Image (cartoon, rainbow, N blue to C red; front, side, top):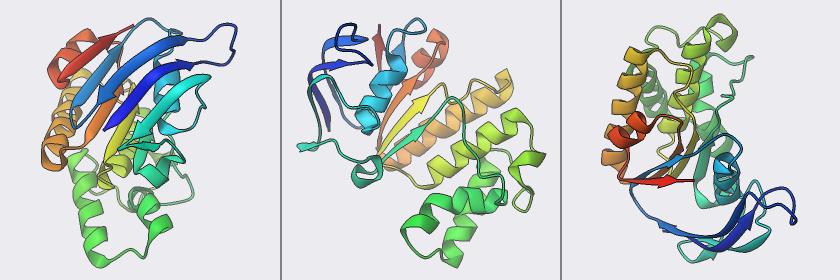
Length: 203
């Protein structure tokens, strides 16, 4: 469970973006809606441990938030990241390679994940050879492959056409059902939030 108690966060104590924010997140998909600049992304960064709260406390299963990977927290940014010197397959395996030795079973699972995000046959290509939407799906594959206990997503499907976006929404929902993880997702689409989320927070 993620618990936020009286959290103030932002870049200045004089003008915090969020004030006295209290909420509990646990094993559901949560949608965060609001105008640009209202603190949605900052909230995700604060939960991830990337931005220190100005005041208040954030705990995960009773422990204060630390480094993201220590708490099995993964964040998928709107400006999706890829490792251009690595193949698509190695991009998916990247986080696994940092933690432990990759097995043959891991490679097979990574190939299946590339298929699930509609990138079959691209395992030996490099991200620079992909379109923007394909690179966003690659970043999604890398994150979902790790099956994180807590997944924070900042506009994760923004670069996709409607058909592909719908497929990726269904994939995220399915993987959530398989893992019962906690997903907190920022989106500008109320329709997307209503389709995917168990609870919606409006700023």
